[in-house]
Length: 397
Image 1 (cartoon, rainbow, N blue to C red):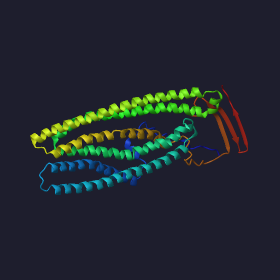
Image 2 (cartoon, rainbow, N blue to C red):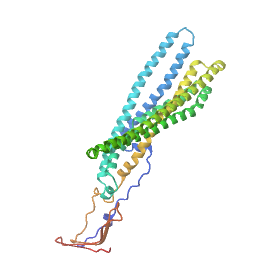
Image 3 (cartoon, one colour):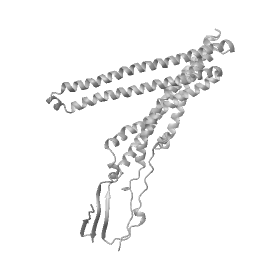
Image 4 (cartoon, rainbow, N blue to C red):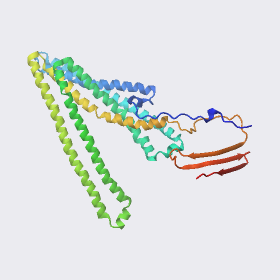
């Protein structure tokens, strides 16, 4: 019987399309139903935790009104407000704990699952794929890259929701208590965000420069210690010491610049916040005198909107963790979804008939990662009746 290979047997799985970017919510694709429910619960608890601060400021405004009011029933009103403070404290504690637990727990489970799937996918890749990879890169993706994903879908996501909830609920409470003063307070929002942006940029930039400077010094130390016998044999101790000290001086200069820049940006941030507070209280007192605003309303609007702006500034740095999680997920998800041209997981096909002769004619082969290097060129192989083997190569070079 002659052997004929069916068309389906020679077909290969089409390569999965490589992603250049990953949507944020696509990071949760490996979560199960239970974990998704916990994530939703964690998000709701984050909103509740973030809403606690505006409610606290609302109660504090009532205390201010009680202090400026008549003495009759003063103790009774303060005691009632104190009970609400205690209830709010317990609720904040419970919601904050459960929020962190849900996000950390689900992120840990998802990271563990992604590691397993990624490692299994790496082991199933063909040899040509490994030729284009570095072992250090694969190890880094298995550890640090998945850690970035875990942070981005875990505690940082919960904190971002919490801070933004504080800002949004604060705006609602502020406009409810007095829209005129709330509009003036919102006018200071761009300046405060610029100040926070400058502060975050300075911190990030100079910490990177300082890290690079110390990394260069550490590289010299590692180089010397790795070849310490050679250095001592040739009397190079003093020379290497000077090289190391020079790099430390560079790190020292960067540290001085960093401290100066952080101090200046901190002062600028504080100036913007206090100027905003001065504007809000100045206009608030004017409204108290002219339009019968109560002092508590001024305090409530000040804390809810101005300190809500600070919450936005606290939420912005979390974007860095989201970006790191998305960029780390690109290569990991591409590897998981990649269909190798030679997939050992496929069962193959049962051939209908075998004659017992194998004849390979004029076959050339190169690895995908090295297309210019030919492993075999114009190869002819013949196997007869399972007992004889005959092969010859034709070289055209």
